[in-house]
Image 1 (cartoon, rainbow, N blue to C red):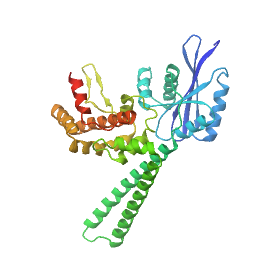
Image 2 (cartoon, rainbow, N blue to C red):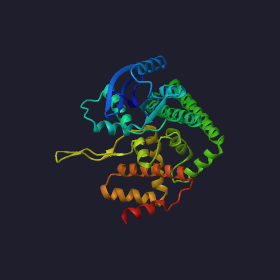
Image 3 (cartoon, rainbow, N blue to C red):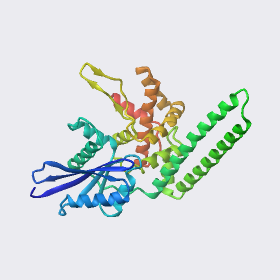
Image 4 (cartoon, rainbow, N blue to C red):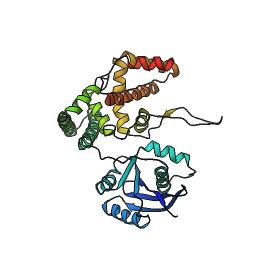
Length: 344
């Protein structure tokens, strides 16, 4: 190969392992994925990876490191590369999965996934990843901690109910369960106070959260969770990307006349984001006539209440994104205008 125009390291990230595929585009403009190796997902592995990449690439063209936004396992590597001046791109999972489906890959393994990521990076112009603001990262940690506390408190309450329903409850077990529930209550209160204090430190963020909470059913904790899980919509460029990132996009399997399945949400995105939208959607259906009208129309169309509720979740999430971008408060005529445009 006489000259190298582009070099990409596609990285499939797991909890303990990084599978790295190295590829390039030469003067013939053909993709060439020519090397693959695994490394430990820790700092010593990062250093070993950089040595390996340097040995197998040309120094006349920079190497772009491309990975999926997979939970939290990719973060240490992304920060390490960014802090040391390397080109890093983090791509939404649905983009990678859609690309891999377009390739002639029969079996999905860590190696083929890394090759798919590398191929995507070679064929796509990607933006440099920007480290999220520290405030959003802290908010994500706090909102997830609160969610875990609520889940554990629910388990403890169920155990308490079961214990008290027995013919002869164990008084000491009941007392310990009540103490545990009291601890969860106090810790949740403490976390909420920390979230509130963090929001109030940023006047612009406070203003934006107030704007978002003008949407029916969306409280400040929901608004904060959405912003925390999207890093203030840092990776999001449009509503379609946002819906895909949340896993609220519709998946249809339909091939000829023999393979047909009911449309369902993919659930391939951020589960914290999906969970955050569930109760607000129900509240919006109850309290806002326009969201209620959307819900009733969809239920009358296919008769499935859960499917209609998911559609409201999507609309709410898209609306949060719109208000974040425009800085405008919720206009009750928004959905009405959308419906009129859809039917016109």
